[in-house]
Length: 236
Ligand SMILES: Cc1cc2nc3c(=O)[nH]c(=O)nc-3n(C[C@H](O)[C@H](O)[C@H](O)COP(=O)(O)OP(=O)(O)OC[C@H]3O[C@@H](n4cnc5c(N)ncnc54)[C@H](O)[C@@H]3O)c2cc1C
Picture (tube, rainbow, N blue to C red):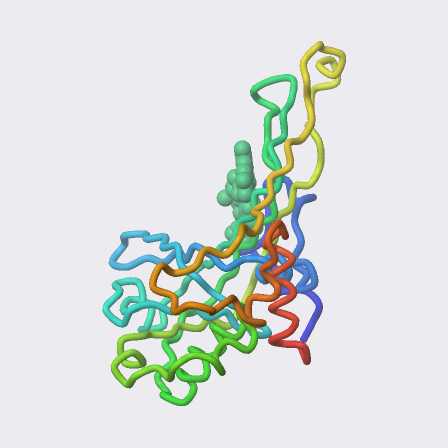
């Protein structure tokens, strides 16, 4: 496997190309610090862009949903999709409205969706989804019923090409504006883990287990997702 994805007209960043990278080493961490993505696809000329949960194994992305979902039924036939992930890292406050910006890390990944039909492969993927975010949790869960497996569709996509774009700097004001008496800078934004809230119907005496160890209160969620990813796929 090469270090970078192949680049052509589909994934070459044209606007502000200096913010772009095609390296797996930069793209994987942006994917692995996310649980949410948006998947864009076209059915009968109509574009849809559906938010959902996903995970990565090597160069393959997986997402799941109800077998009755239009998105999953449409994608099962092997249509081209573009999966995007965006992290918002900061509000960039400039000395003019025009130069205000946002610090971000984003990825666009291209490929062809494929529904996993083989039942053993599907069961493996269903377990992998839980395990990837909550290592060890499957062992404590009741087995899925046949109906639950049937009602779930899992799609996967080999990443054919991808690009990342990253902005991680202060305001890019016009030279003559820097001396203006206006506060400028960056307001960092983070998603932070809160204290677990018990289900109201929890039997007495139960507390979160080791499968939630990474999700410590006050921790930035990116760190927890990276830690659980590494625990699940340490041999990658
Ligand atoms: C939070 C946020 C705020 C933004 N604000 C602005 C803004 O105010 N103005 C603005 O012009 N742009 C903004 N962008 C960047 C925006 O995502 C696009 O990169 C930009 O608008 C150029 O789009 P385009 O289709 O012309 O890109 P092109 O360069 O023509 O796209 C070609 C290829 O480059 C890659 N690519 C393009 N954008 C991205 C991306 N963001 N991440 C990963 N790959 C990418 C894709 O593979 C795409 O197919 C913002 C992005 C984020 C995440």
